[in-house]
Length: 97
Image 1 (tube, rainbow, N blue to C red):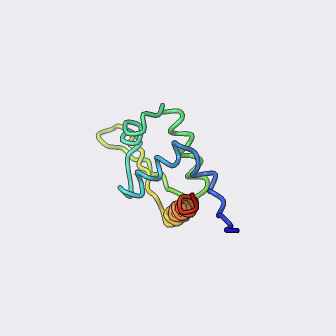
Image 2: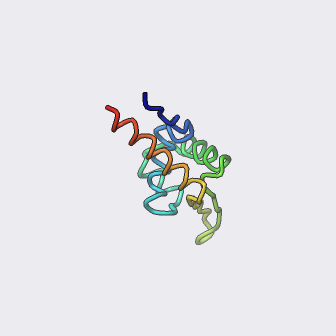
Image 3: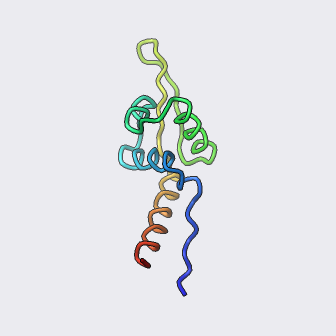
């Protein structure tokens, strides 16, 4: 009997997985870009980003551009490793099917 890895519950959320997928491809993205692509509400997106930030999967930088606040999310090494492990775990499930 094959033993399967447990899927990371932080990444098993559809919106958090979407955010991380974007950041894996782009390395960083502004909040408004993530909001546009994911079609999430500002509140929900902010909450999910804060969860990923709290778990140290990404970093959040706030700055100003032309006197307007800009929030930039960047995936870090911990997030990349977690994402890679999540993908490998899914591949194990797919191979078994």
